[in-house]
Length: 282
Ligand SMILES: Nc1ncnc2c1ncn2[C@@H]1O[C@H](COP(=O)(O)OP(=O)(O)O)[C@@H](O)[C@H]1O
Ligand SMILES: [Mg+2]
Image 1 (tube, rainbow, N blue to C red):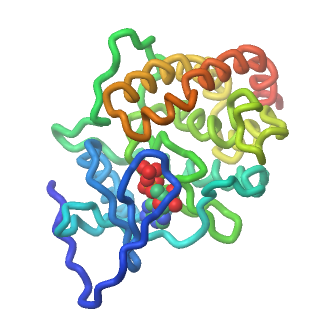
Image 2 (tube, rainbow, N blue to C red):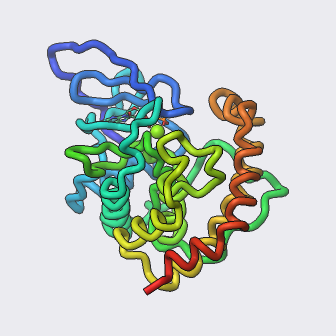
């Protein structure tokens, strides 16, 4: 299904650049809308956003159409996005729990979405041939899979909406929770964490988010293994994307994201039993 042309209101409003993300150039706000370039994953994302609207899920922008400049038009979600420098509230445990609840609500809403005929996830790059295999757990839903602080809008101190669905793809629930924990626990060497998250109790935060999500026992026991496998894969995919896409991806690689991923893997090995214990303790 193609996406309808957006009918602009009579009064024109200025374009205000939106910062925050690392990679998408040209994200702007116009009045109550956001305009973004249409990315390679748009067929999946547009179907997903329409599904979320149909099932009455309120924690995502609505897709309003495509403007005459060929950009996707989404509703602007009012609220607060972390931005940089990172605010101290990133460490707040009540906010962390609200992230777990939002991701759960999204996953449950997305679980009824099936990919339209002929639609596949697409990120504009193929997988590098030397990439290690993914975790073997089957996909359960189309996950958001990019649950960074810049992709959550908070209102009244609670995670209210996910934005930026460019990475959405079939995923297992443990993959989705892992992705949230990556940024919000966070999973990685504390030296690499954003300042407000440098001294936090990471295993405890894993537990808080897992409880708020309502993570199953079996998924809790799989989390660390998934984290290690995903970390290994991300080193290969980040290097590959930096090579073929350049831009913000190349910048991140030059700034040492590959070494940061290696440090994360070593940190995961050192902290595996503590994380697992926190997740599975009665
Ligand atoms: N629908 C939206 N509602 C409110 N803010 C948004 C919306 N879309 C994007 N933004 C803001 O713009 C920033 C960058 O947009 P995003 O879609 O996340 O692009 P990127 O791919 O660069 O991460 C976000 O971090 C957020 O602050
Ligand atoms: Mg973003």
